[in-house]
Image (cartoon, rainbow, N blue to C red; front, side, top):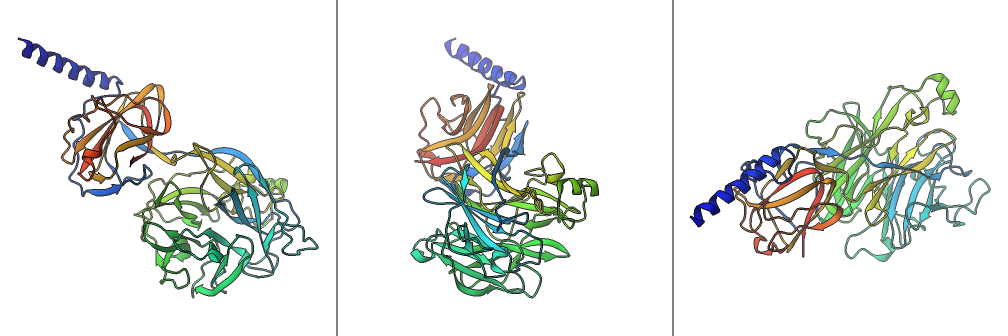
Length: 494
C-alpha cells in the first residue's frame, strides 16, 4: 500500500510540473525535447557564448536573439587642428594600465594615404573618460604638443591597425605590432615596445594586384589556431568582401583566402573588425561596418544644415555582428543591424557608424563597443556603447516558458556556471543528460535548484551540490528549462 501511494504521489508531482510548465512554470517536462544524433564536440573548460547555433540542438518556446548595446554617449571629439571630420579607423586596446585608442587624424577630404594623414592616440583609465597625451613626437601644422604617434610616413597613417601581440615568447621590443598600407604600397609590419615609438619591421608583407587593403587589416595571434591570422578588405563580384591570411611569424603570410558567409546575402562590409573575444578567445567576433552604397537618406537641405562634406552623404551604413570559430568561415546568424544609426540626419551620412576594432571590458559586468560617428562633419567623434559581459546574444524564453537542448559534448571541470538573467517571476533549471537524452541521476531538472537572478557567473547546483566532475570527459547534453529568462553563456571550471 505504501509503495502504491508513493507511485501515485510521484505521478501527481510529475504531472503537476508538466501541467504547470504549460502555464508558465519554469520546470516543464524534461523529456519534451528529443535530441538529434549529433557528433560529440569537446568544449573542455572554454566559455561558450550563445552567439550562434554551435551548441544548440533544439529549442522549444525559446529563440536565439541578438542583443543591441546601449548608447553611452560621446567619449572623444575629433576637434584638434590635426584631427578633424575625416578621423577614422579606430582601434581600442586594453593595456596593462588602462585603455588606448589609435585613430587616423585627417582634417580635409583627399586621396587614400595622402600626406595630410597622421596617427593619433588617446588614453583612458576606465574606458569612459579619455585624454590626449602630450607626446611631442612629431610637429604637424606648427603643433608639437600633440598626441601624434606617426606622421610623415604616407600612406601608412591611412589605415594604421595595431594589436597587442599575445604570442608566447614574443620579443619585448615587438609587443605591439601594426599593419598599415594601401593597395599601391602593400601592407607593412610596424613594431614597438611601448605602443608609441613605431618603426617599420618589414614592408610589403601582404600585396595584391587587385584593389584591396584600403581599410583596416585586422590581425592577432590566435590562441586556438596557434598562428597569426589577418582579415582584410577585398572585392568579390564588385562587392566589398573579406579575405584572410595566416602566418607563423607575422612576416610571411599565406595567399589570401576569401571568407564564406554560409549562404547569407552578399553585402558590402567596409571594415570587418574581426577580433578574438577576450573572455573566449577561440571565438572570433566581427563588429563589421555594413556599407550601403547609393542608398541616400539625407536630403540636400539636411546635408547643408549639418555641414557634411558634399561628397559624403549619398550613402549610408550601420554595424552588424558576425562570428567565426576559425578558418575561412564566417557565421552570419543575425542579419539585422547590431548598432542602428541614431536619430537625426548626422547619423545617416556616408561612412559613418563604423565600429572601432576590439570590444573591451570596462566594468565588472560591462564591456564597451566604440563607434566612429558624424563622419565628414565638424561634429565627428568617437562614441561608446555598453553591453553586459558575453551579452552579444542569448537564448531567450518568454513568460510562457521554453526549453533549450544542447548538442552532445564533453567537458573538463568540476562546476557548471552560467551567465543568465531572469525576471522576478522567471527562473531556469539545468538538467544534465546522457548523449542519448536520458537524465543523469542526481542532475535532473527536478533535482536542480531553481536559478533566479541576474548574474555573470552563477554556479548551478542540484540537491546533491554543484560537483559535476564525475561526468567530465563523458558525452553529455544540457537541457535548460526556462521561464522569462535569457542565457548568454556557460562554462565548466574547477
